[in-house]
Amino acid sequence: MNFDLSDDQRTVKTTAREFLAARYPLSEVRRLALEDERGWTDDQWREMVELGWPEIAELGIVEMIVVAEELGYALAPTPLQSTWAAGALGADISASRGAVVFDGLAADAGTADEIVDWEGAVVTGAEVEPVRALDPTRRWFRVAGGSRSDGGSDVERGRGVAIVMNAAESVGVAARAMEMAVAYAKERKQFDRPIGSYQAVSHACAQMLLEVEGARSAVYWAAWALDHEPETAPLAIACAAAYAGDAGRRVPRAALQVHGGIGFSWEHDLHFFLKRGEANAHAYGDASGHRERIAALTGL
Image (cartoon, rainbow, N blue to C red; front, side, top):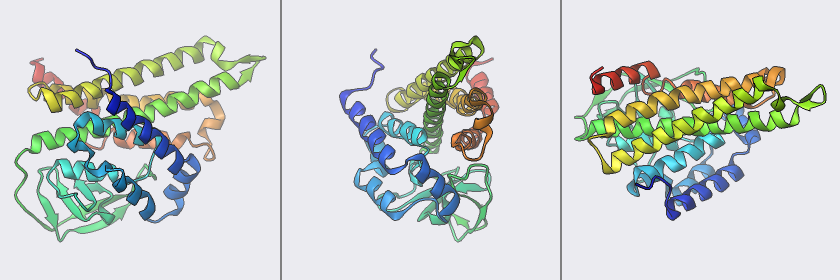
């Protein structure tokens, strides 16, 4: 079985990497996170719509997570991820943005045209109140009250798509943090030697690579299973969520240690990756919950 990306999927990945690098240099990510009320612009959203990204899951879940990983790599502040999750749970996102309520909170709910809950029910007339969140690159809201319609017909699959999309974004976050750490380890010198030549640093970077690649493999397995082997999907999804959730927070933490004092400063951009990774690790249940799911599915 070939688990490599197809030519079309590689094209999607390259296009996403180039587009996001041009639209979201880290200076723009910082500006949107700290200075813009919504955290994204109409022009940025319109360009994503023109690329067909809100409905890319129609091509396949693998295609969606290819873009999701690049969104995490760029740390893109955009309601696209929330719109994907809402669409997976039954929201009509053909010409609108969506948001998903999980444990009373919903990312991007303040600018969503349609809100659904974790049961796939459309939420109308709810009170939407902004809350201060750990991750400043994504706007979070408390959603209370309102009325709810009946849930969608395939809620379990929709949840799986949302979880895998979030996991793919965490892989991108981890990959970028790892690259930042490796680049710094090559440049920073102590005693006339790059710090990467010391075992404590080189071993930390090797561990980051192990976690990134392991998480990426788990996420692609889950995405493939959702499209082609639904009987395997629940286990694959739980594995991807647990592995990528841990990698998304542990790799930026390790990268911070490699950077030393400069990494802990407000001026350095690494803390944005750490906060996104930590937030993603709890977005749709934490790693311990997903491991309990693995245990239940495998009879442990």
